[in-house]
Length: 103
Image (cartoon, rainbow, N blue to C red):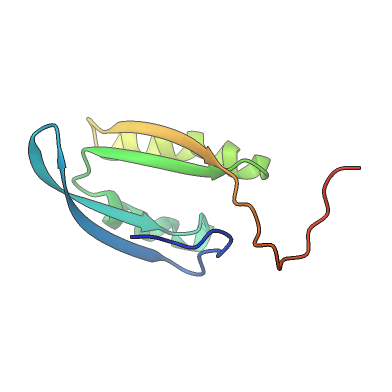
């Protein structure tokens, strides 16, 4: 389930893993649709029956953060009760990538 830092999702990615949580064996399904609008019609398939959701956004992109409200609303409207958490992330580009910092 490891993923390299700095590699963007192209299209959609999926991984499934069985874990133990609160003394119960559960299946953790992780879908990454890269936030593209073209995948929005498909997303209900991804979260159908979900008991929880973690919504991730890019700390360097304000629009990414702004879309969190939309996704929280989608989950609450379609999959109640769903526990929803939001988390920001910032991927540090690999040393070989060209990047310029402030100043």
